[in-house]
Image: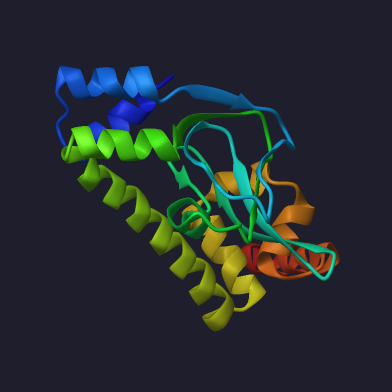
Length: 194
């Protein structure tokens, strides 16, 4: 399973046998059960993850309401970036939406590998850039797009999510009630029939 992470890294930079060995030895694969939390708001994140298989939802609790911020799937890095790097309580929650396999990088392992192998600094930067672009996508989507436009964007960029994610979570991701999501889907289907 860890081969998927190695393959991902090798698409960015070539790894020596020793570097591949370090990944295999120090980065375990963990199975997260459906609905299991990887991180809860208020905890300090001591790990970040690479999704090998499955789906993880980033969400917030706001006024006792569950609000989905993003869905991470295969080949995505997942973290509470601020919590992991600054060692402060997380503002968000991370939860598996289906049985999910992740490569787990602890805070200690990340820094040890970075000290020993400078090449991993480049790889860490790639992971953090991916995370930053996701956060920018979330913000831009809510500032510049209607819920229907966000749904269409999701449909064009990650169509498999429409089938994998329960409607309630899709609705909270779009910032609408499930009934409104049903109307959006019907409107889109009617337009496609015309």
